[in-house]
Length: 195
Length: 195
Image (cartoon, rainbow over all chains, first blue to last red; front, side, top):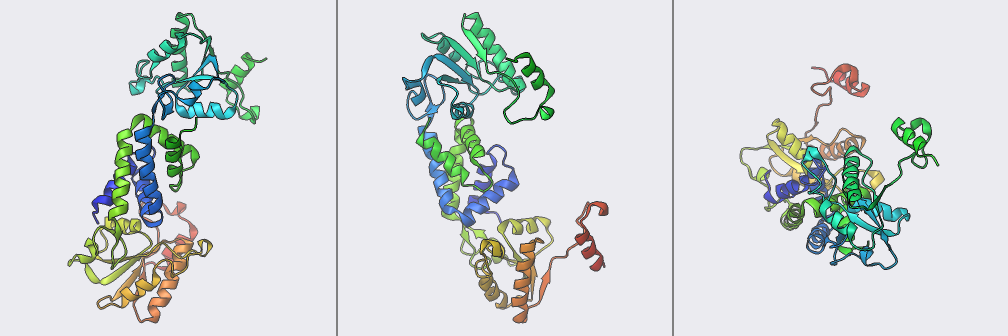
């Protein structure tokens, strides 16, 4: 049973993050057996997205236009610039409804183990963007992981050296949690930042 | 942030089994950010597979030809017909190197909860195939799950009524396992079928 078209599909599916050979096989068989229409739609959607999605020239998020609708929205507060690791993080912040400023989307985070430094994540472009007229505060919303913290620290140092006001999302106890089950570092931070 | 091409890709990915909205988003962002070439290859592979893969007219497995290479292989023992639920199960049996006969691939298994009866999985075609000249034994290799057992039972009844010899894969203790951790039903079966 060597079928090039089937093997090609399994190989292409395996290349997705988190998909091993077994899952790729299962997905391929599922699509061919039960959802050929879904397979065709996925192929079209992939081609469409690759062809049409590019990066916003101002904030670097994904968009089909030169500049994304958020950057062009006159109701957004242009004095605030929130820095996130990915478009997914940006989407989460938008869903929270807690932020009405503009964004700058990094290309990931600094990760020495993966050989990713400040240059690789677009830090230079952030520094250019932050000194453009109008930005009064840069909010660092990279993740609260080791790599996210390193990224925030490096960016904060560079931004402050240019005289820009820098803040960081608050650390603390997440909503809905019982103290008993919250990790000690988080409790210590929440205590230190109590208000 | 509503981008039709991006939303379309996320929707199409969500349709894959086991992929929720979060995973679909992560996959879409990954492909657009880090692997546009992989996205293009996947689109091509999907279209190729949908266009070229069909079912073997004899055993119903996936193939690009009218009749698959296994069915056409003169070295396979045409007196044995092994019935499996899916092409993936067939592939596992082939990898085991323990079987040199022919196959019949069902379209899944009988599952009353999903409204799938004997007709939906191609039982009628199996019965036709089994009475074609040459088949001396039908080996039921459906899964050892509740649904796989129901399927095996229904098929065995119908096949035996036509005077066909029917066997079932042996149940027993899997290789590499310690008895302590094997479930009791399996131990009881292994004891009953001891040899």
